[in-house]
Image (cartoon, rainbow over all chains, first blue to last red; front, side, top):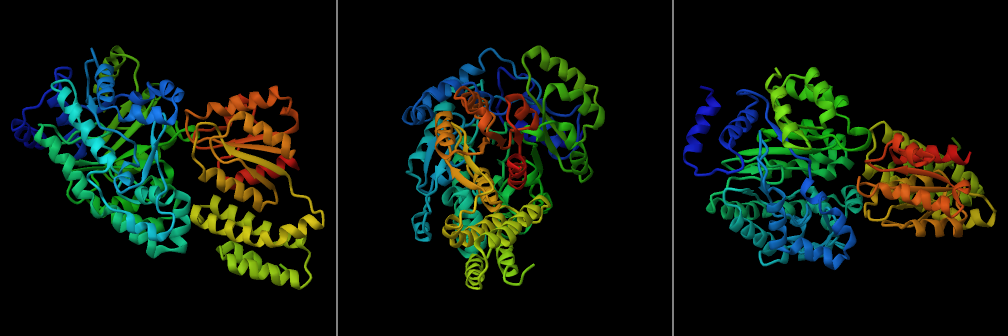
Length: 374
Length: 211
């Protein structure tokens, strides 16, 4: 028996977790764990869902609202969890598509936990820059009674009350690094700061990572005590501790600045995790891959090629093949029309496909095709 | 390059705004014409910055400090340029479309356009079609430049172009668009005059459009 499967079997035996709407849950987890080891047990893993699909279905409603109403919508725990639960009613989850609710106040919530104010839009939220003068840094402090911290906890508990055997509950989107510093300072201003005031930037970097484990552990403990696995917005669970390091801000800076300011954060935030998937948000972030992959605890990457001219996946085949050659497991997001060409060009080693589909029939047909992909 | 102008060029290139202002003042004190200083040092320096960005040698921080140095030098020249009736390369109204609050890309474009000698009217973010139209009329602009960073806000570009057309202004203004989800095909589809993938190319394209 495959070593990965054997070791995982021992872990799975100690967990009492299953989903009525995902009969192949255990097998799917085996494929996920094999993928982390750059192995395939029977076929490449595949997830059927569009990124942000749940939120984007609410977009029209949200655009009609004023800012107060939008904030209220995001903050309505019962509504959020109920909407998610209804969105998956009657659905059977195939392949490595795990039904996951994660409490979401937007990617700047980490900055908000230290006192920054969030404004809420239709699909995401953003922070109002808080550190206008350097003295404002003195006000930055993690506050567990903070409105956003309390709301994330409320959303989590509300989901845990309703999830049994139907969906998994994950933790929120945590960005403890330069993205947090950019949210505190404003991204354009931070670009100036890296040249004008590197010492002050270092101070903010230190603050941004200081309490990361405290925050992560709080929600990890809450979820584990409720019998949940570790999972977040990517929907790829772990029986241990799963994290999604990222640095979207780094698309704007040189490799030198990433190594000076960003790498130290990455090296710290991956330390206590069993599974880390780095979110590579486009070709700008990809220029830092040598540094990112120099951190041995980065187990895999999610490649997000972007939109517009960057969207078609076939132009990225050489890039993906380079990563395959380095034995880096990669998540690849592509549309259905590209799937056949992509599979003709690539071998499945180390690849985790994400494909948006219209219906269950499509998913089952794709699965049959993937099973023949060698 | 003229020895009174070369220090200005170098100061902008390395983003030293103090050196840029000192050397612009020194050039003025030496009798150099404001228009010549603009055309022969500040604008070429920003062209070079754009080339370095396209070549992957400069990134956003380096562009920003170069633009800041250029703006510092230009600040000394502006009153003199007005007095001597030196015309800008063209006039641009720029903004991020309604519903979109992203501004860095738009700001970089505005800086590069200013560095190319354009007069800029920056309407900021979340700009409605009506606001764009009002600015086109009021400022008598040559170019409307729109930015969108989200696929959900990108349709506002088409809405704005239709509104400009309905206002009877489509023939008097060139329209360029940019932002992550935007493509050349989309620009053609919605009737824009051009798509610029980055700030440097936005400046080159704008110069060609008013040429």
